[in-house]
Image 1 (cartoon, rainbow, N blue to C red):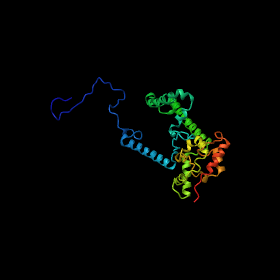
Image 2 (cartoon, one colour):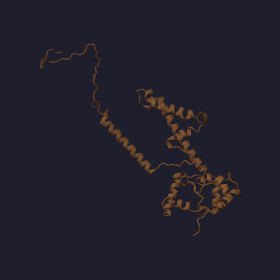
Image 3 (spheres, helix red, strand yellow):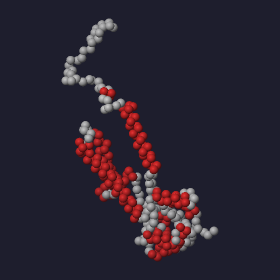
Image 4 (cartoon, helix red, strand yellow):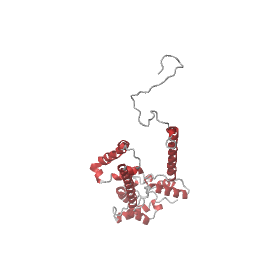
Amino acid sequence: MAHGHKSNEKVVFVGDSRVKKKPGGYDTVPPDYSAYPGKSEAFIPNFLLKEWMVGVVVLVGFLVLTIAEPAPLGYPADPTNGAFIPMPDWYFLFLYQFLKYPYVAQDYVVLGTIGIPGIAFGALLLAPFLDTGKERRFYKRPITSILMLLSLISLFYLTKQSWDHYTHELEKTNTIPEHHLREEKAREAAEKGQGEGGTQEEAAAIPIVDKNDPVTDILKARCLGCHAPDMKGNESGGIPGFNGVGDRHSKEEIVDIITNGKNNMPAQKDQLSADEIEQISTWMAKQKAPAE
């Protein structure tokens, strides 16, 4: 190295001889990504821009899907509706079905709700730290790949089982899904030239006939828990009121509905006697709008 203060003096840097140079040598400063054409690129903005574009495409795809096929909402929770079947959102169906099994429910509900899900999601979070191998081909990582496949199969199986059970319960109780019922009512209203809810408002305005008939004691004990104490039903839950039911159905149809069920109405043939069904259907057939 040069000494003194002469500006034109040549400066020579001498490396530390104690640091051994490996055969072939290497640079202490890593090469720029441009030294590997086609194999790497700058994170900002090249890689980040590509990721952003892919994210936008996926987001637009989801938006198109939600517009084309709206998610079925199901009926609102109603403690007065004995036929109501509670269901979580689709992404929790697998856990909902999982909690139906006896070994993770009742006395073991903490294990099913906190223990096993905690282990599963904890393992997912720790996966990058536990699996530190450099190999990225899935068939070269058998343990990780097998666990991933088993998890996906389990999620798919439990979700399908939960949905199949739900549709089976709907069929057993003759319940029409809420979004189907809503579409049917909207179509009927459009055909009659009415806005949505017009038919409901007209039906609610029809007075109840023979409020003091003895059959109302049976109704209070068996029916008003779902159809509401004022007998106007719960339209948001798909439960019609008794107002004007005689205009909508004949007595024979009412007997069949009470006996075998329809839509949200469960079959009552095992709950009511034939004489009680006859009394109720006769009373309901009288519920008509006053003659003008």
